[in-house]
Structure formats: structure tokens, C-alpha cells
Length: 71
Image 1 (cartoon, rainbow, N blue to C red):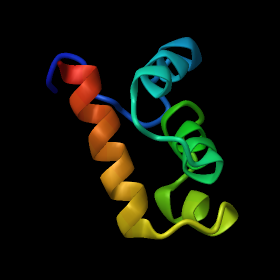
Image 2: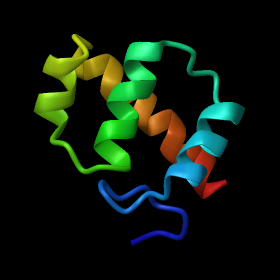
Image 3: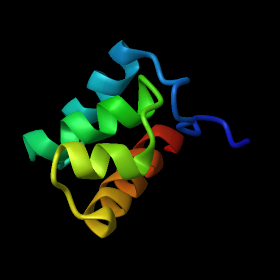
């Protein structure tokens, strides 16, 4: 596992909000979906359904956060 890797259910909520703060992600739906996935460990399928977000857009946003976290 890389240093700074984002592992579902293992991301501290404060760390999550710091990453969101410096990211270019502004969609409330995506932010909430990412939070449920990374902080609380809710499955990717469930967060995409719950917040009505496209899985591809979710993946792109998750990759953005991952790159920031590993920088």
C-alpha cells in the first residue's frame, strides 16, 4: 500500500475534509458519496445509488483525491 493511499473505511474524517478543501471537487453529491465510501466504508455500489452519482464520475473524483493524498 502506497504512502497516502486512501483505503475505504480507514480515512480519518478530518483528513477527508482537508483533502476535499484543496481538491477541485465541489459537487455535494460526490463529496457525500466519497465520504461515506472512504470514512464509513459503505460500498461503492451503494453510495452511487444512494447519492445518484455515476460510477465513472465517482471513480474520477476518487482518483483525484487519491493523487492529492499521495502528493
